[in-house]
Image (cartoon, rainbow, N blue to C red):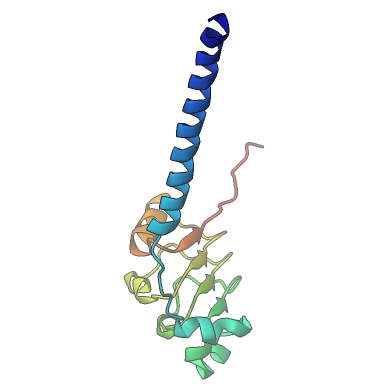
Amino acid sequence: MNKQKGLVPVLIVILIAVVVGGYFIYQKQAKLVVIPQQTVQPSLSADICADKITYRSLEDALKEPNKVCYLDLSRRNLTELPKEVLQFNNLQSLYLNFNKLTILPEDIKNLNNLTSIDLTGNPITIEETDRIRSLLPKVNILNIQPMNLPQ
């Protein structure tokens, strides 16, 4: 009889292990079944931007505006964004580092393929950065300002 009493807790532990293990296996299979497949449509800009050419001249970019995916207008002493930039419908990355920009036009929100913009080194306020973020909520905005360290 003592052997039977010692067997009961072992059987309970085995039963719990089987139930818990079965539950996890069921959950894993259920998760695999529940995940819907999505059909991803290739975007036109993805095909155009496959060569990853970065235009470093506005004049060159304007010769083929539909092919402009990466535009680097860094260190040009720009005080405002050239309006021509707004016609680059496939523009994905815009580099405006180390200019004198304090504001960007509201129309920049119409650059639907833009994924990143680098504003490092421009005298842009935190408020303006927040406004730009609200205009471009899906865009990665890099705006690193030099620290004013005490001398």
